[in-house]
Length: 466
Image 1 (cartoon, rainbow, N blue to C red):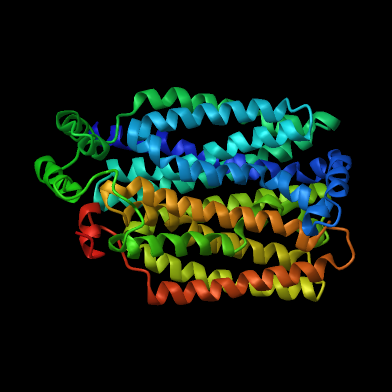
Image 2: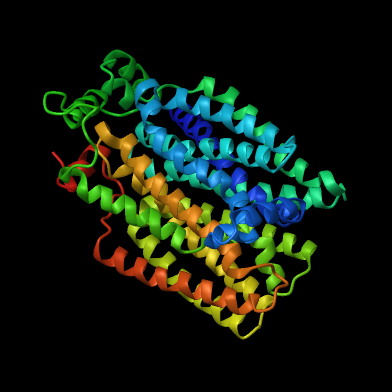
């Protein structure tokens, strides 16, 4: 019963990841429609900017539309640590659920370009906040031996949300809804958002957050209810890690004592996006059309990519606490390098079709088994209790900054799928991503520590933080 309550709490908290995945991927089915719909607006904005470099290009403003949610994620990731520390992880998740709901409804009902961008920005705030608060909450309620699997539920739900977005887009596209088709694509997200909000009322507050706030008896009650072992010993270790005599939850974050976990969080988050993963997720239909697929078949290929992502995430979830975080990263890095290099060659040689699809399936499998499964687990583990929310916020902030950069620049660098030279431009972009993954492999070998099976408070000591 107690283990069931723990699992239920982790699953509910991880539903923020499902909305995270759905919200970020749903635009892939509509982005080319939006480019046509707002073409006049883009031209007007570009004309108004005149000779101001990239601001004077219509492609920049379409990238702005796609990246509008990502700007919100950056802000949401950076700001979410404060309400998470002040009001608790669960209450903050409830606020984020409401933001998801508002964004879905407003996106579907947008009356012009600006209102659509604002709606997507609100959804981005929720995505950025979820990427911070969800993994923290799950890590703080989980025993060390199963923490990897339970926190990886967040990534599993991200991937499930991505697949559901692709599948939803494919199904809605089959109804031939014409000019309102894109509105339905965004609007269906309101259903899981409402469900997430209601389910959060059935899970407990984080026991570690309660201890940080001095609410010891409430923390003890939660730990007993979720089936924690050696409750007294765990509470003592948590108190020592907080060490209120020498530290405050309000102490500055950017200090030399936290330099090692700060660098670890920065690099794993930056490399996650420098693989180009979200260029594929956001522009999958465009990329497969560049490889020669029709629009309908390109959407179907996106569903296949999403299904592959889900299968390999499930596989990683079963082994992450046995093989460890580092081995998964090594395997994933090698898969990245092989697949991205081959895609670059295929586009340069104009040999698309089956080769590109096969390589992207290897790419997405490598991501799901490596970076995708590890990133949120690893960042949630490496910071002390007193600054965990700030550390998770730093990792998420870095992730979303790089995500925005990749997503904003991709349509400018590649151009429309039918444009002359699009294939060669794609080759150069994917060659760059492959080079970045060579650097990631070196970083994993040289710098990344293993954290599997180690209680959170002992990881702090392993990294030399008193």
